[in-house]
Amino acid sequence: EIVLTQSPGTLSLSPGERATLSCRASQSVSSSYLAWYQQKPGQAPRLLIYGASKRATGIPDKFSGSGSGTDFTLTISRLEPEDFAVYYCQQYGSSYSFGQGTKLEIK
Amino acid sequence: QVQLLESGGGVVQPGRSLRLSCAASGFTFRSFGIHWVRQAPGKGLEWVAVISYDGTNAYYAESVKGRFTISRDNSKNTLHLQMNSLRAEDTAVYYCVTTDSGSYHDGFHYWGQGTLVTVSS
Image (spheres, rainbow over the protein chains, first blue to last red):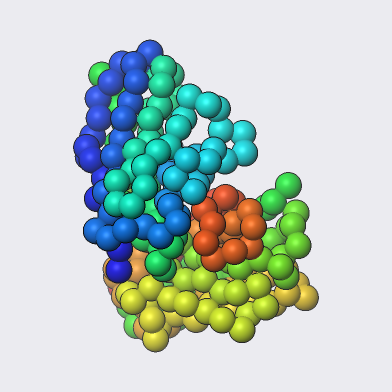
């Protein structure tokens, strides 16, 4: 089983700043089968990024994904109030597993 | 547009059974693999199971293998999750999820609103 570890657990930033979230896998994620999700309280998760760097339909270009192998990053430029949420990474190359999440909170 | 509507959640005693359903619309249901993903209260996401487009293949998380069964009825555009021998740790919101391509190797593009299962005496 591939274990995904996200860091930091909580990230405190101000609107307008840039957020960098990390996801590290316990073994290489094949073919960059890595996705990122955003979840707000009381809502289902929303797909942001798949294939490590492809934006899902309707996702603004302030969200970008990068990385390969075991290290992946989600970057959110110019934070807006609606971006403060919990973010999960997921691998779907060898069965499926999620990271434990990073909470992005307003500083 | 793609819609996934879960139902069947509720409160159930440990050791008992419950059957969840997911009604799908807005896409060619019979061509897509479908997943169940769950989230315990205040916790992260956990993948539960997936079934192939035609129902011939199903895969499960170790935590539910042998207790849960995923199935589908393509004539009714409906997915099911039969949950037996329920435990307190199965308490969660259960989401019905599908991809954009129907492939096993794709992000989870579409999510239902979820149905809450509470296992408690």
